[in-house]
Amino acid sequence: MIETRITKGRTGDTPGRRLTNRGRDNQGRRVSARDSLFLAATIRRRTDSEEELVPVRIRNLSAVGLMADYEREAEPGEPVIVTLRGIGKVPGMVAWVEKGRIGVAFDEDVDPMLARRPVGAQAAPDPIQHRPL
Image 1: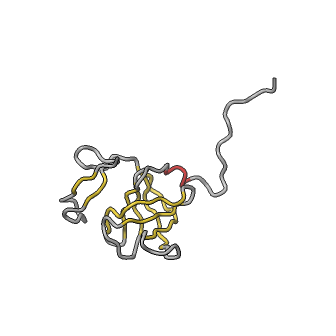
Image 2: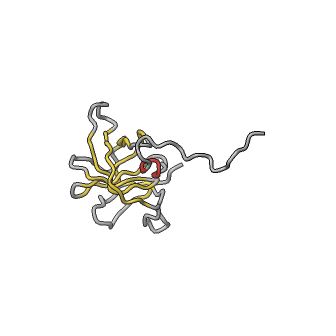
Image 3: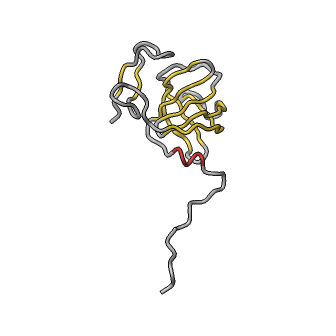
């Protein structure tokens, strides 16, 4: 079960906006580890057709969400689907929009290291050397 809280007071917050508290401490500060990177992805509002993908550049990514360059309009709380290389389609909701950027909170945690894996990379080999019997 994901708990929600009402946010207020932070720059860019809309009074009364509901956000999930995953990845936050008891004072509402983000505590989930984030990777700073530049990664191509797409964002689609769930009400849009499959063809209405908006290309974005991910600037940071964590298990619970992301920040990306985004020049379209969106509303906090709006459901979206982010498609990330190495991870796939990730449902979430718009957490905030400000000055050409968007924050998305994922519905479920992801492994951000999968998005960093080079294209065509295979899983690491088994570190244990097996000898035939």
